[in-house]
Each structure stands twice: as C-alpha cells, then as structure tokens.
Length: 172
Image 1: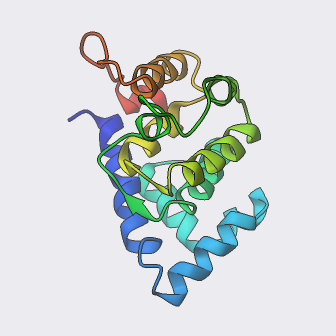
Image 2 (image 1 turned 30 degrees about the vertical axis):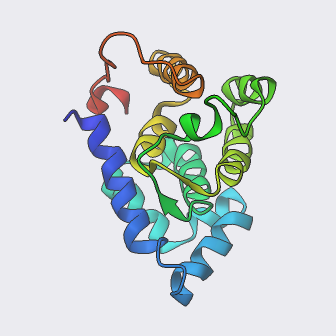
C-alpha cells in the first residue's frame, strides 16, 4: 500500500473514532458544527487539528483540511463502493451533467458539491478512497488523474491499467 492510500485510511480511522457513532452526543455535535462551520470555525475544532496532525497537514493545506472534514461530517456509513460508483452506474442517482459540474468544481465549490453528492449517495461511500481523492483533488498533476478515475467509476467501467497512485510524500 502506498502512502497516499495510507492517508485515506488514516482519515477513515479518524472518521470512525470521531464522527461515526451518531448515537454519541459528541459525534453528533461535532458533525453538526462542521457541517455549518466557516473555514475558521472548522479550524478551531481540536478534532480537526488531530486529523491535521495525523495526516501531516499544516497551515498551507488548511483549505484542503476544512474541505475534507466538512465532507466527512456528511457521511453516516462506510461502504465498499466509491462515491462516484454510488452516484453513477446503470441507474445513476446523479445526472451526467451534474456529475460533470462536480468534476469541474474548484476551491470551496468542491466541498459544497461533494457534500451534496454524499447526501445523494445516501450518506455512504468508501471513506478512505474519498479522503485520499480529496487530498489531491486540486493537485496540478494528480487531481486530473483522480477525476478521470471517478469518471470510470461513475460509468461502472473498469479502470484501464493499474491505478497509479503517486507517493503522498511528494503530494504534500
């Protein structure tokens, strides 16, 4: 397993520990705060800084971190299928046009589009894969590759060749 996948698994484990148990008042409260938080309010949460430390993210990646925690706050269940696969397939829950807009989203619009997508996917998807993809969504080299893989997943097609995942050390 490469390091980028390791960071996705780290984020998924953080989600399981901190947000997954919605019967817990602490998890419910944090999820609610993160969903409605401004970027600075999200960054003021100690649990968010715990995730930043675990992922090795600093102030330069604050926007990526905020995007990640706000999307994770929408998820209720981990699922083996990627978000793109849950959105698409033979009977898609998201239209092709809306999926294309999601792929073109940039900056803060990415978090908004992905949060709505998670809701459309019954608030469940493969959390590790989503986190891994979100960490490089805007990367000049790996972002486009990641979104291309999403296209294959959305249409239910096998991904051609091995999914080459760059080292996370170089993605920072």
